[in-house]
Length: 520
Image (cartoon, rainbow, N blue to C red; front, top):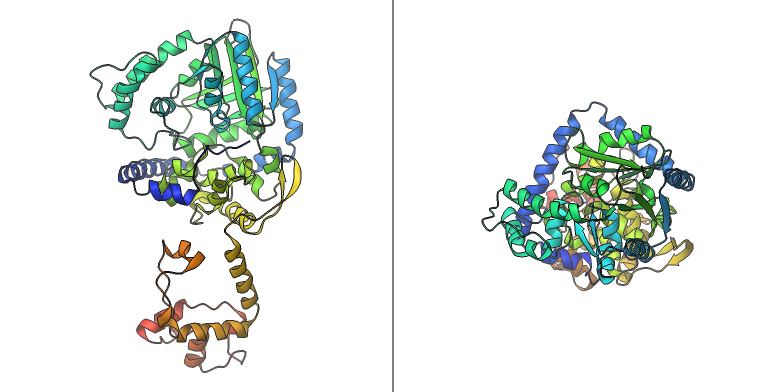
């Protein structure tokens, strides 16, 4: 069921290496800032964007509450239209189904539409082991595949590559996969696109089997929807004799009217376009029009377990727009590879660990791959409160607890390496429940402030390696208040500071500049 790439280290280790790559940071900074600027302009054009966002979230939540009903309705409609529906519990079962279907055609090559679900299950690698070649036809996915690389972004998988790098990849690798790149290829975008077009056209005209994902599945008619910007996807969906589509069970929407909302939300939030350039829809098979055989593989792979989590299930609303990646300060510096999963950025930090049931050290580290600034929530077109889910998953990492794993309620043990953190939080909880202990601790810290090290020892090193330990003020806020206001704690005119937060920020200023009078 693993969603993460094999052998990937925890996020802090991978991010430390990525942030040291100056060219990578430059590529990411330029691309993400450009995309988010355009998106902000496109969204601002709609006066009802907030209402659309709310509608999208409500449709998704209603669908997830009744997912069993809509999936059965979808299966009935697809079957009635001449398609065949297959159910896959996990990645292995999905790969076995697709491999068997391709072998039954007698073919040894397939062309693919860009698909997050097939990346999640490692379909290309599974087909390769079975002696079947899978060719990516999305331009960015082609760049990644030719470069023996992994996607770094949901919308723009090759966002970490610049034009000169892409030209080198085309010149060195295209000939191994089919039609080679022109000898005098430049790094002009038009020339690179033309080289890709000629290379892919050969694949399209020869392929007899196509593999796709789906952005949406319309339950009432059994219709699948793919949105894209290049038109290559449409070639994969219409030219082959057999089409196999792999889609997560959360992609279903009840009606075409519901689909209308998402066709407004998705293009503006992802590519900053008012309308998607290519929106392909198909329902089963039609004699003489498109593939003669259609198979839909409905993928669970941890989604039902995620659905059982009242807080975490909102991650299943995701429509893969990638807006959260483009505003995330962590992603902008670390890039997508550091997340070790086909789902990078903030959405990956909450989706991957849940689909994987916190099964690896990488999964346990991903909820910490965030500053909790909240920018991801602000731009999400379906209002996923990513910071809320991150905190929820951090609690599970540190404290353990009850979760659903493979359909069974299971007690999850805390992740290793957090014993000191749990002890510190228990001590802090007790201290803040006892105001006198807080006051005594503040005074003791003030007297010993010159002994506080710039780097913390033991488990605290992980915190102070990337942050400066704050200077301890010479006077606590409580003491400053008592001295400047002349009132005792709890007396008339007092704030009752002993029962409130310590608030040492003002005291820090007093330590540097002396006590300040109340501005009133």
